[in-house]
Length: 309
Image 1: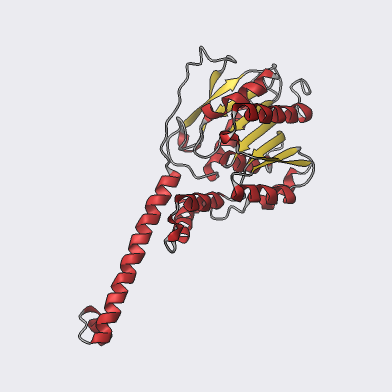
Image 2: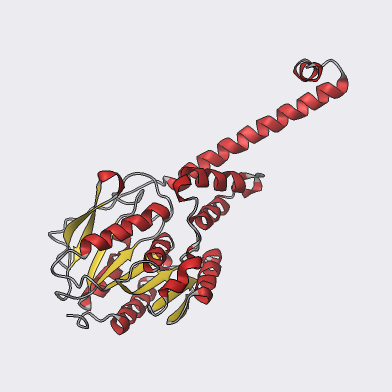
């Protein structure tokens, strides 16, 4: 009790110095914790600028298609019809992106008679809530595929997936557990949503502050505590044996490129690795057209629209 009293009301010089240092330490911890919490909030609830379109004037004659998501809510996507009874390619946008940003890829696939579906993940575009960087998004993708399989104008047993970073993680997760996935492409995908948190923390420049990285990681794990036992997707890649798969990495996102390379090495055949100079959303129009042709040719080779009619 005397020690506690001396700390609260120091009378000796050493006690005063120690109390001052302790106060500074506690203030620093609280300050860094506050900064980390605000940074994590910005990462998980990024500013949204939803893009809306009049489907009546859009090329490709898309229609709205809704599917259920957790909590009894529903999510709306756009279905672009291809050859009746053909496989459907679900295009999964990435972090800080939305469905409107991948419409040129959607059009390229539809032009080759694929059915194509695209929607906004949580916390992006027109969808509310916060992002979980892949955990909840995986469930949303699964639900979308299940709902699409009930349509009478698609092949209910054959789906293709394309996904960028966050969408790529969700695509990998679904591909490891859904036998209806006939082929998939993941672009700048990562092994664990926690990887993306660390990438965004580093991008903020706040890693110069001690413990920010650890605080953000801890906060993210606590916010997603229900997924605490979810292992990195690489541990289940063996389950994609026999599924044609393409891994794409870009030089301008080196950390993600390293993740993609590691995933490619661990993945079973058949597989291929493609390296690009720029990430999909940073490409020029000409580069993007070349890239999209590569993606279309991949799906034409491994799950052509007329194969299962």
